[in-house]
Image (cartoon, rainbow, N blue to C red; front, side):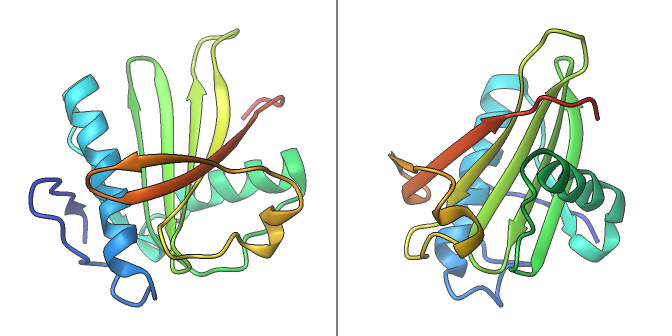
Length: 154
């Protein structure tokens, strides 16, 4: 069942099995606030098993572009298009959030972003490949993030 993410009253709904559920919920709320403020978009997530197409798209891009397979269980996903950009998010049990930003028009920005919830270790599958920068968030505490540019067509 879809869940509208409330960034004013942060909830761990759907993320309870994560060992860093409050931080992951804050990270999810941080994304919801960004899309509401920038695009007036309501950030809605679904359990990963209810949105196999979105999960498959993100998984395929990770595998094809960088041969990355995430070991943690996906909990929630969302996929939408806003301002000519196709977006997808996957929130994992470990506290990892992966987003794909894919501009529909040729020549636009296309990238995969990784965000680590406060309190989680860098996943083994990402540790040797990426450096993570820190940013502070009122909702999520310290977020560590990294990204790579997508080269293929998806």
